Length: 389
Image (cartoon, rainbow, N blue to C red):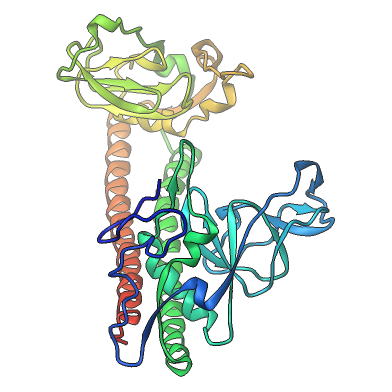
């Protein structure tokens, strides 16, 4: 059954109007409202038999879906096929037609396309970049069929998508504006993403240096002499009621409980599932059996022990091929180096807390920048295809 959004009216099969009729309206003098099928050839993908696939570069590059998409152009192929079914040419627009529906990219060479893709080949009167940008604009509104497994859109529904059609010189003018703007946005986005990565790396680097450079008054001990790990508790179903105490699993705090058998502040690390995740809990809490919690701190600073265990490579000591599990006995004898002075431990913990807080502030700043850049792209596309550029 077809699904539509906003003001669109559902229609059967491939009838035109699969996207809201308010989209792509001819709002500027000289523009027309048309459908993709009027201006393009649409080629639905078809997957070859799996026995013809290879990763050795034999045959034609094969793309199955959005997995191979880049920012604008498909990435280098990882799969080839010696049996060719449906072919997209260099410059064709590729649309993901199954889970998710709507993302687009350009083909950079002749490729074989599977059933997760369709190729859209523009005719002479339609600038392919003009259509590409318009499909980016329409992507949130494109709706296909919802099946039991995948949401999808078929060839007829793609052909029925309404688009704003401008005279060719106007198309080229708009593409020039968008190309320049999107190039600047891409540069700004790359810089923001790099800064975001650098902010995260800065904290990890400092944490690493604390336990490698060390200093005066540091001593080597076995882990069990610094803190004792203990497996968490089973939780009877009848006791699983909401309460005031955090319920801690290997993935973090997943709920609250009406009991807190371990006094806070506390530290826990994933024992099975997400092995090596380390958590600091301020209040009393219930550690589930998927974690090891610190049963004894030996008067060491709990926040410092949290940082120590965050630096410790627990994953290296997990065993079991099917469901890896961390056994406390495998790590208790491993050497660690810590300051003997509780005051020094507290100072280090406070320094790391302050740096982590600053790191989070920078991450939030750069993430807001990325969000603003995405909003700017959407605004430019809206203006372009409502005749405001």
